[in-house]
Length: 131
Image 1: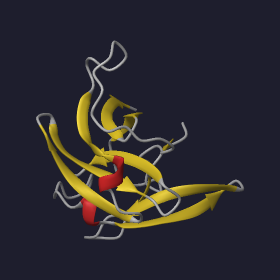
Image 2 (image 1 turned 60 degrees about the vertical axis):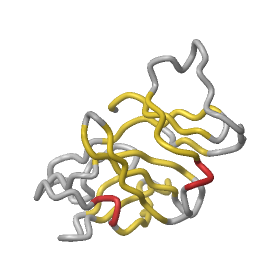
Image 3 (image 1 turned 60 degrees about the horizontal axis):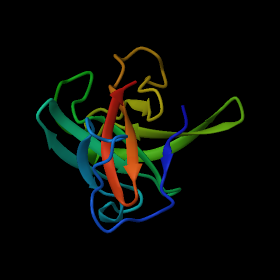
């Protein structure tokens, strides 16, 4: 699944028939490129990332190995797999690297990082479903 790529803006959150059950996260314009932010959500802590290429990803804030809530402070990066660029996040505690599109660890031995879809309506980002 490809990441959300921002391309439009709206002044206010939109409640339409296509977004009634979506949870508002933040504005795209509030996210800095190459940075992550922690989000408190009733279902748990989340981490939202905007890459240098303006892709937006949403994951669990919990490290799959230690359970510590640190992933938003991880190191954003990328790798090439089968000729395709893949955005990644490295846990700041032990540097395990995860794919942001699937949550899989690159070495394949660590538990998977939970990743969620991000939906956009203008400048507003909403929590989608667990992938």
